[in-house]
Image (cartoon, rainbow, N blue to C red; front, side, top):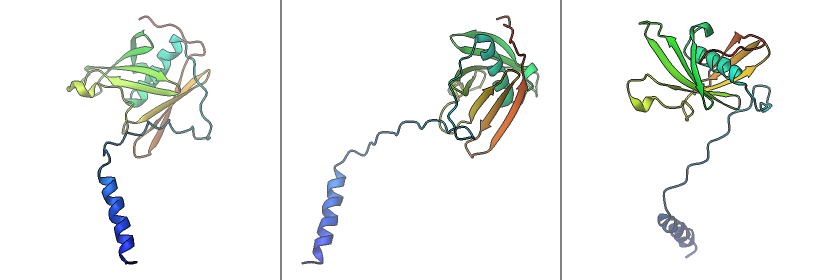
Length: 164
């Protein structure tokens, strides 16, 4: 009888678990990892001119362009429209950019499949962060495999408003 008791308990637990709903709620998204020095970045308040510069630098870093090659076509409701020449065929590439805290979130606008024209802020997308000083913007990209790259772009101390 004593040998059967653990078997009976195990069978009871197994049967009890069978009736439970298997649809588990997805865990909430984890916050972005802290900066390399271990501190959380302070919220960044950007003027429209600085937002243009941050997005211009971010799009340039993401797409392997010089900052000067990226043109800002306009800003609406905190979303920046950017264009640049495609390096292979010289055609025009387009994307949108927005800033969330210290993160640059972008969305391609010219992918052949509409589903690919989405904000790049899902699991598996690179994490793009920025740091702004008076004279430069550093864009750090962390790929899903953990590889990190950083580029620094010089900017004017007092950004000028670009024509929309």
